[in-house]
Amino acid sequence: MRQVILSMLVSIDGYIEGVDNDINWHVWDDEMQAYMMGFLQTIDTFIYGRKSYELMLDYWPDQKGEFADIMNQTPKIVFSTTLQKAKMNARIARGNVTEEIQKEKEKPGKDMVLFAGANIASSFIKHNLIDEYRIIVNPVVLGKGTPLFKTGKQQQLNLVSAKSFKCGNVLLTYKAKNMDRNILKAYDTATSTLIELLSSLTNEQLNIKPTKNSWTAGQVGDHLEKSYEVSKILLGEVEDTQRPPDQKLAEIRALFLNFDIKMDSPKAIVPTNDPIDKKRLLTSLEEKIQWVNTNSKNMDLSKTCLDFEIPEYGPFTRLEWIGFNTVHTQRHIHLQQIIKTIKNDT
Image 1 (cartoon, rainbow, N blue to C red):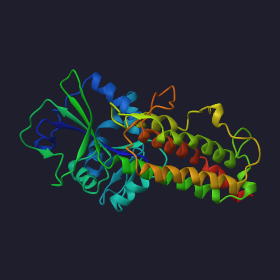
Image 2: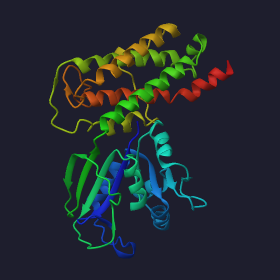
Image 3: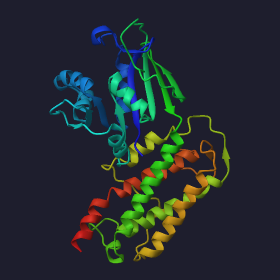
Image 4: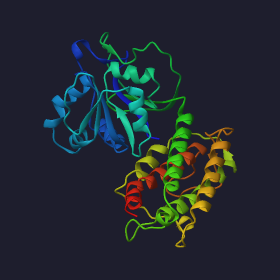
């Protein structure tokens, strides 16, 4: 499941704006720019309220360079009941905030970042829509202004990391304590969508190649069935984790949900070239998916698994293995539009 990340610059005393919407106190340099460029590689959607969107609209269209291109071209969602039209690859959302964001979270893709004012941030906090907080504390005391947190609601967070910059800024990264629940829900959503997709096809459609060099829908299912075998390591040897248990998820998500990248499958999980039997495939997939759903409820998901690792990433925590299976499934679900077209034509 995609995550919503709140990213805000704040003063030491917790304000995001000074008097009269003043933000000229922001501390920024090349190191901060490099950090933000890296962060935005894991993002494919910006979220704004009307006010913050209009401030962005007044500044970024006239700017040049790689960073400006990202700010201008990245798709945007603007929550507003009064805005009549949107520019810069933006769409206006007027409906229920919770329902709108929940739908977005369940779509394949990278994470979303909330660049917003205090009002919409408060709404997201109130409805538990923020999965991660990236608070960039600037070495400035404002004394008065607009505070970031206005809800009056207490929320328990887990500190993931603290990073200092030469300019005096400190990046504090926190995760909401419902992290495990969100990742398990994302796994359930992805695997349920997979089963629904494969179930909608006949045995004949399951074995049709959408294009000459692609896999059939049945081969996609066979590939995922084989990859789900790795879930057995959740019950294998583990050790305490000396880092945030979801630290590698953003990198995994950014890679697997970048559909412009062609990925080669390890030989062990390359699908068979034989015709796929729909009933056998669905039964096996459902058994493996249910195994994870049942066993994960009684596990400490923060533990690091020692029985197997992917060389490029090193050891995963149990939570990261479930997240890996989720984004791997989401990547292949991305083929569903092609498969549905074939279904409708046969």
